[in-house]
Image (cartoon, rainbow, N blue to C red; front, top):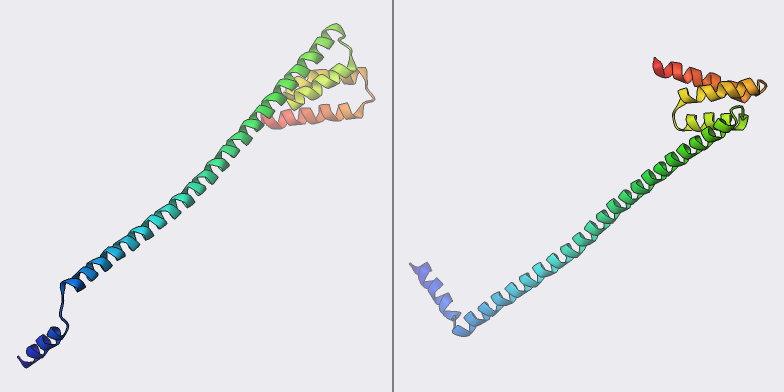
Length: 152
């Protein structure tokens, strides 16, 4: 009991008045405002950082899409150019079936288009017209080997 009495005396020396309660409430409000502003600052920081990251990744994604679109349009352009070249050589060969330049061009164009089998006939005709062209003979042999390899 004596201990409780001393504790009561100590508390009586520190009177709690309405002013100290108000100060405590003000401090609590101040802390609340500080925490709220801290949270708002953190949210603002994260949103700005997040939006920057999102923009960066979306720009990179858009850039990749543009690159792939350009690449596919370039490939399509090349395919259409090769098809036009093939058509041009065929038109020349309709008028001049023994035109060695057109035969060679048709063979090279078809090889570029991946039509190795279609290149063999013009190569054989070009070699028949120019039997001394070792480059055409080598190309014909390589084309035949390529066809045999792809069939197996």
